[in-house]
Amino acid sequence: MRVDSGDFMRIAIGVFFLLFGAGLIYMFLRLAGFFSAASVLVQNVDRQIVPVLNRLQTTMDEINAELSTVGEMTQSANTAVGAVEQTTVAVTHAIAGPVKKAAGFAAGVSRAVSTLFQPKHKEVV
Image (cartoon, rainbow, N blue to C red; front, side):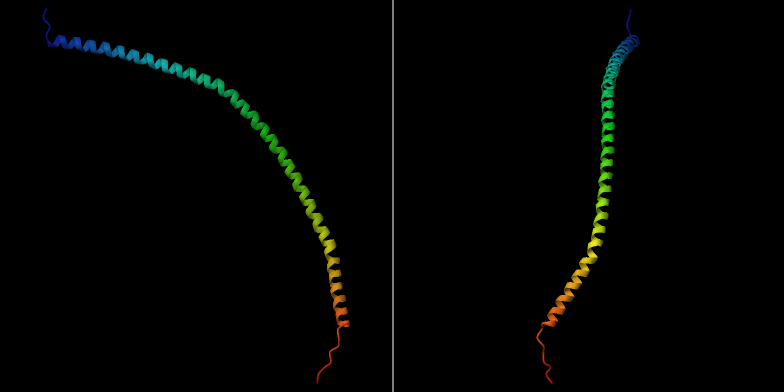
């Protein structure tokens, strides 16, 4: 039997397709292993992240409760400051009038006393 170039070409193409098919099978097996490992990784992350998210939610709830308490304390302090301000204004109005009158009276008395005891100037004509 004589092998010519056509037979050699058919054998070469057959071997090529067999090697190509074996390469594809190997590649798909490796890809399946990769996806399997990725699936396990996602499951592990899911299993670990859910408790973390639950703890985070609990922490956020506690923070919100504390902020609510701080808000109430701030409101109470604001009310106290308002009351102190009103008291200060009332005391200022109650004291300011008499103090002004007393200061005016004292200035008048001082002026009167200084005028009374001032030496008399003679007019020069």
